[in-house]
Each structure stands twice: as structure tokens, then as C-alpha cells.
Amino acid sequence: MEKYSNIRLISMKDPALTLELKKKPAMGLIFFRAFIISLFRSATIADDAVVEKNRIVMRNCALDEKLIRSYRKVCGFSESDHDTVPISYIQTLFIGLLGKFIVSPFFPLTPLGLIHVFQSLEQERPVRTDEILDLECTLDCISKTAKGVETGFVLRALCRDNVVWQGKSRFFTRARVKSGTQGTRRIKNISEPVFPEKKQIISVPADTGRRYAGVSGDLNPHHLHPAAARFFGFKRAIAHGMWTLARAAAGLDAEIGINDRATIEAWFKRPVFMPSRIAFGYEHVQDSTESGPDITEFGLWDDEKNIPHLKGRLINFT
Image 1 (tube, rainbow, N blue to C red):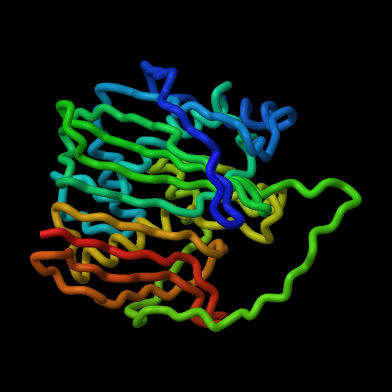
Image 2: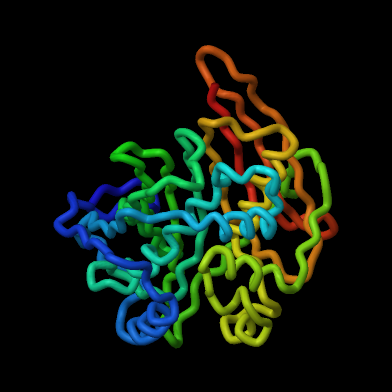
């Protein structure tokens, strides 16, 4: 284990196990297992732990063209393109694999309470709707701070043994405070958040979570109904973080275009409660040159309360 300031990097070693799935995991069963496992599994990890970079794969995955058209509609992508897959859609293919991974014996943390904090989408070329993909989900890194544990996964989609899409997903698990103890409260100097130039206001209807669940397979209850959200500590149902990223990607694609080879990096901030209205904006920060790509920074935020929901950047390669 290496140590940098207050961040401890848990030692990882090459995969000892590759688990191949023959069919898409049943999310209902995964949620049931996650609840049971959470009663026994810890929310932290020992400093001297060594974790294996195990992998789950699923081969020969055909894409559902009808579902992709519905995804385009729900997330705001152009519905006129019937031949290629939106850059953010491929991530939805891994939801079952990620779910299977976190309830497996080789995942070291409780499967409940994982907070999606970062997602990258790296497209080597547009994926066609008629292509057959092999999917790989690998636990890549674990880091630990006083506030909790962050786990990182690498997601890869291959066509004929060539990587056509890759993503990095990072999740945060808050450290549990023991009963009868209190953490030290620290006063922070909070500066006003800086947002890019506002381009539009996006409406987020109350049924956005249910509609996105229908096209993505992400059935986390706090996205689906206010009562379920209150059970998990939210005052209202919240939109999927990946819907906010997909909606931002759709706006970028419509206004400036996402190149055939492109990367999107996004950091999830505060949740979007439904229904609501959020601002979307972007600013171009670097032109494409021989030595570097074209870069645009973007964000989603509450325009009235200056609360950030999503911050990211689009990197277009020539």
C-alpha cells in the first residue's frame, strides 16, 4: 500500500479470476442480495489489504435498436440517427455487470451506499447498432480517506477483439461513524461555484427517473418513487446521475458535435431532485492543434440556488 498525504492507495494485484456471464443479470435478484450482504459486509477496508483485480465478462452481446431509439428520446439525443449508438449508452450495458460484481464474494465492501462520483466515456469510434460486443468489467483501484473508500472500475466494450469504447466508473462509500462518537467539525471557506456560460434551461419532469430506468436497466429505488427516496434519506426522488450526463452529452452533440473519437469526463456533484429545472452550459477552452485535442468544459446546475449538479469536459480528437 502506498501513501500520499491523507489518501491511502490499497494494494491491487493482477486478476486471479475472470467470471463469464452467459446472460444478463437479473437486477431484482441483485438488489435482494445487496440488501442481505449489506447486513454483514463492512463499509471500509483494512489499510494493509491486498485486493485482486478480478473481472466479469459477458460475450456476444447484441444491441437492442428499439431500446437505443427510446434511450435517445429520454436523454435528448437526436432521433434521426438510427445507425450509431450515443456515446453514453454503452455504459448502460455494464449496469448488470457492476451489480453482479458488488454482490460477488470478491468485492470487499458493502454493496449498499455506493455513490457514483465520476464517469468517463471514451469512444474510439462510433458503435453501430448492429454490432456484437464483448463486455469486460474490472475492479481497477481502491483508495481510502478518513471520509470513506473510493473504488474504481474499468469498463471495456470490444468488437472483434478491438476496444471500441472504454469507461472508468468511480464510486464512493462513506465511512460509518461508530455510535457515541462524533467527528471533528471543520469550518471551510466556501467560495461561490463558477459555472460555464449558460446555454439553456432543461426541464426534469417527475417521471424522469422511471423513464431512464426503463431504457437503462438502472432500477435503484431512490430514482423511481418519492417514498423509496425518503427511505434512503432523500426528500424527493432524484434523477440518475447518468441521465444528467447523457442529457449534457446530448446537448453538446446537438450544439458543437461529438467527434467519432472523443472522451467525456464527468464529476457528479449534488443530486437533481425531481421535478426541477436545471441550467446547462459550456465553454470552449482549447482549440484542436497538432499537439492537443479540442476541449470544451460543461456543467449542469441549479440556476436559482447556484448548486452544482455535474461538472465535466468534452475532449474531441481529430
